Length: 368
Image 1 (cartoon, rainbow, N blue to C red):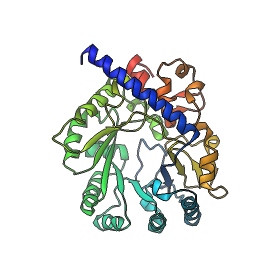
Image 2: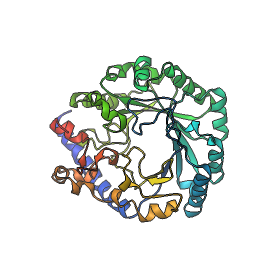
Image 3: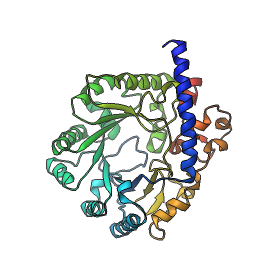
Image 4: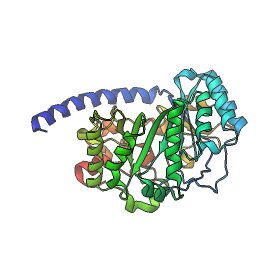
């Protein structure tokens, strides 16, 4: 790209992001609940090396069904349920013994719903049943080809089970998104993964980098370098313009990516929705923001045992509706801080008040 064209693109993006900054400031004082994530359980039939919530088979906690349904009913009275998507997750959400009882109530109240799953429990009958409950979309994680996927998820033969689930969901007419977490051991498989994804008839392939959160903190040697991040973003950028495959390829919602990559690798400019668009209920009933955020007592906003979710949504979440960038010496000196507000809440270091991962710094300065 010529310098003249690059400067023109930067000018356009700067104007757009200035407008986005104004929009974000409005949201901070007038948040709009759009996604409610519900952590049905911490139990999972896999034991993924990178799990942000450190879920596994030994964790047996499930959200109390009666308590959750009461909270969902109150929410339906407090806001327009048609404006909120309920996203069921875990752990593995299908392990909750009252999964379909919960889903029926969500649908009957008028909410749309989606699900994040590893896919291993979805056979053809399950896919058909999910369709009868008006499931709008499913996100399934496929983290590399068979060997890489199973190495990360630490369960043999789970790759085939997840791939079969994609096929069954397609047959049932349910929209499928696949998410792939990229790290040092599978980044070389991206081209082969792309060919695989193009043959699956999925709606979108969401490709993200491994984050320094949860169990991934025990394997920091897997985190991508500056060169690998650039390779990943360039890969996504190029594939987005490949008309031979109708699948949407995009980077995840996390991280401000600098002038060069913003609006190039996903449809929208970066904005962290934690506490602005996104709220959640943990399996112990705690009211929280994004489920990927480190579980810290001071970030718990309430509990559905004692608090009405929508009251909490309107009146609390102050930590997520403030300018985080002002808290960090490094962020406060950044000329682009108004575009990211301290970057993603789930990779914020709440002890030291600075980002655990600043992709913009990595890209422009070579260090985080």
